[in-house]
Length: 81
Image (cartoon, rainbow, N blue to C red; front, side, top):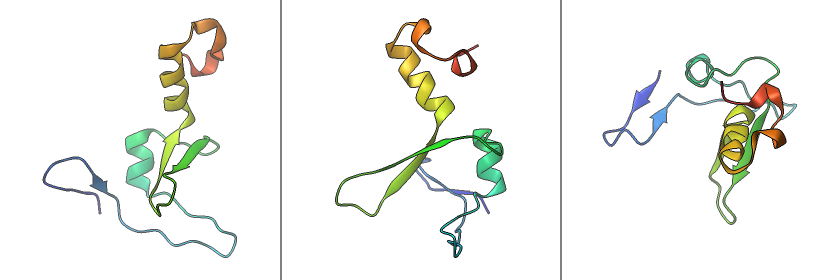
């Protein structure tokens, strides 16, 4: 159910339901597009005073940090290849 808007700024993957345990299941297409596998860590951020939030894979977080830091500070498993 992946849909792109006209400006191609946003991809809608559908909706998810929060379980009794507060868990959600990420849509398969999203996991495939972002190469998210079981056990991967995600960073969740929210803009203050907003109901909007975003996920970022820790692989992407570490790549962003790597651009700022010397490779010695980034764990080997997160280094760009």
